[in-house]
Length: 266
Image 1 (cartoon, helix red, strand yellow):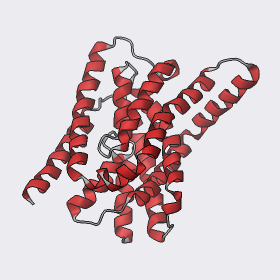
Image 2 (cartoon, one colour):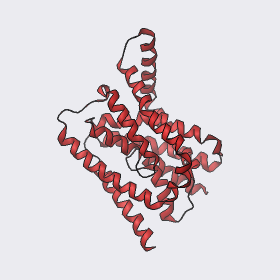
Image 3 (cartoon, helix red, strand yellow):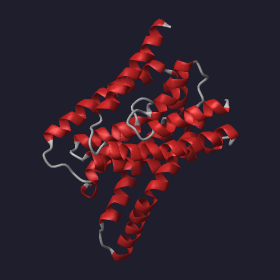
Image 4 (cartoon, one colour):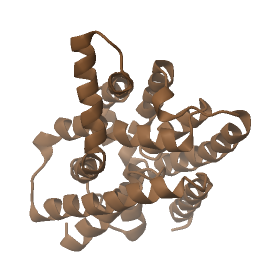
């Protein structure tokens, strides 16, 4: 792999990881459309490591407060909002972790090679995100903020995240959809999704750590995904204050159509 491709893929990962458009799908579909050799799951995980660092940097204080809150709750036998949310995030991580471990070989050797499945998943989830967000905005008069997310809501979000092991569904896309359908506000579910990405990406990185070879291309890819990830997080947190998720849904469907056109006619 050239340094140029590593930079391009790093940008794609950094942008797509936090927007509900599926970074894993983009890391497969964009090289396919450009005629590049697929980089492989291990390299993708390395790029995910860069975006994990971006989340840790921007949400370190938040995660630290949640962790300290959980420790204090154990010592004092009381229940704080910080401690509660720490354990809710851990609980929401378990489903995707189990599915990722159990289906690792299937994902690596079967699904990642089926371009049409990835493109179809991209379009289907795009449609669901569009309809689900519109429905939630009309159905829920009072939406749930971050501090009032319940254990039931967190577990449902965690289960939905397990579907994101299939490239195209999108981890952020499935969790945002699950949150919106339960009446969680756009700002709250976006923040929950960002925080939830840390243990999931850490687990994936550890799982594939033995396959990684830290070449200069890999290191550059990690740095680029880290930098663009920071920009993407700040953009989305600002964007959703005044907009819904429709533009991302339309983009997903459009990209899916482009992929199917190439599959059928070229």
